[in-house]
Image: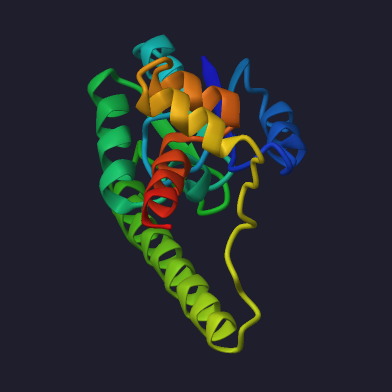
Length: 185
């Protein structure tokens, strides 16, 4: 059975190009994740790995959709191989049925990993320059007029931290950072 795997990083991105390729290739089942590729902990990827069986072929549009670092890529392909499943990446023309395909998989996996790391470095450099020029101030601070009241309830143990976060619409890291700021003021 031909099984496709598609991934986009955010809901704002479009998966249609990948899905069109899967239809073109006669893929019978497609798994789609809307998640970062920085690690292999993705719901549809896990489901795909459980679903595949000997004789199947997993097809992706390109390696970066499947894994963003060499270790994850090689681990995922090894898991497929252990189950008797082949792996094909169309963009890079990689097919793990052949020894050359296995070699190329390793090379392209390393290139995808390098590109991701380079992107993160460029992003950090851009942010540092913008900060130095006063153009980057980070995310807008969540303003909540009732912070003092909720803080008082929380410190009096009338509500839990989880309830306080819920009332304020904050995630844990934001809540505890605001608590520190509030206590220091």
